[in-house]
Image (tube, rainbow, N blue to C red; front, side):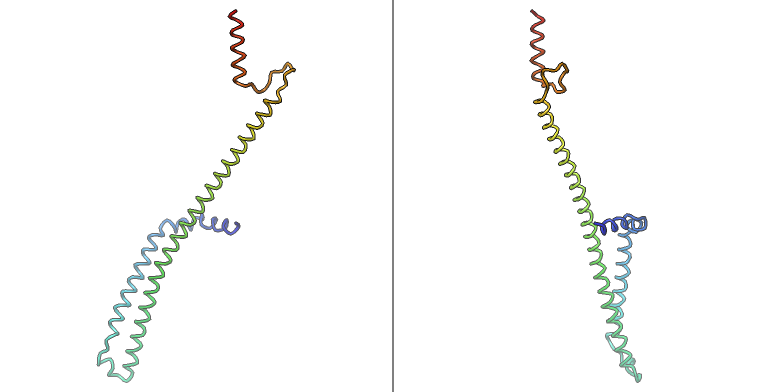
Length: 166
């Protein structure tokens, strides 16, 4: 509970809110950069996959050609994995945000249900108190009772109206 409070405090900070406002653009910009790096690595891979005879003419030409081919393959794999993992990270961020929203909605609905339960309990306890008051009305005292049953009130009014007509 304490950890979630800290995360909520961090996520509601001004810096994080400013970053989240443009997060979609940042993600797309970085995907474009990774895409360009990946395309460049493909170009380099094609460039160094075919060996020319003039590259092999020098004493260390074959070693140099293998080195360049290895670097182009390395860059291809690094750029490809970076691009793939960036899509995975983007999906994880989206799922985490959706999960956080659902948890917040769940907590709000839970609080609302708890308030409705407390209200229902108070209403039912008030009804029970009214029934107790109705049963315990002192009849012999001269004070007017606090609770008046509407049906009894209507009956008394009809009796009084009939008595004044006579």
